[in-house]
Image (cartoon, rainbow, N blue to C red; front, top):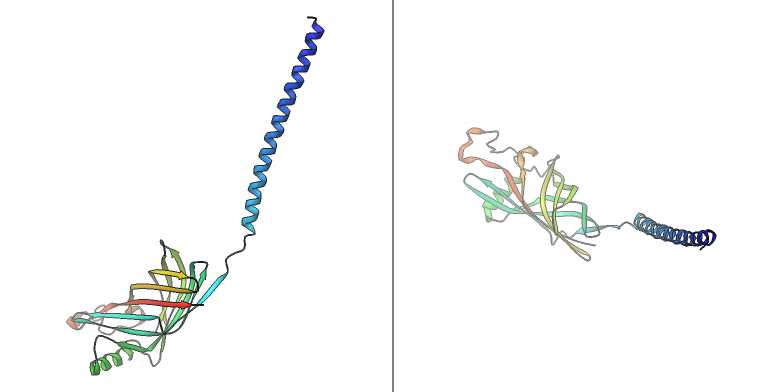
Length: 227
């Protein structure tokens, strides 16, 4: 074989090889471009995905309740307080905010009856405790909601009693079903002395003995809300 023929064969082989490399490079570039465009499309879709609309649910005051428990050295008393208004805000199935107003003049004791109940209720509504003539309502406003599991959240908010506001955090179970919501929190402890309720508090009257009333009282919230 002449050197000229051999040279031509090499040129043809090289040309074919170069074309294969070229097409391989083009194919890889197309695949990479397709991937980049797909990622860009996903990002663009996410960026323009409409945000869930905030929905407001109105608390059904007749079917909602607040239960209270106060303890002292020699025993305890319990009762209820009615809600006068309230609302809960949702983004999809997630609680995002809310507030409610408690009617302090509706406070009743349910563990005693008759004259004993009237005397206890009168004292709790007097200035020694909640001073309902001057402060007829107490309020709670949600400031933060942290997820804590299926239907479980930790709620932080501002509790106002007798015109004094303090932060309060407690766990709650919140369930939404279509246009109805049930929010339940049990065993919520409130330090009454933070709200200037010091009557028979051992924190301020050390020698009070068995007449002492514990600083913490306990609340159970059961809120039913609808759109």
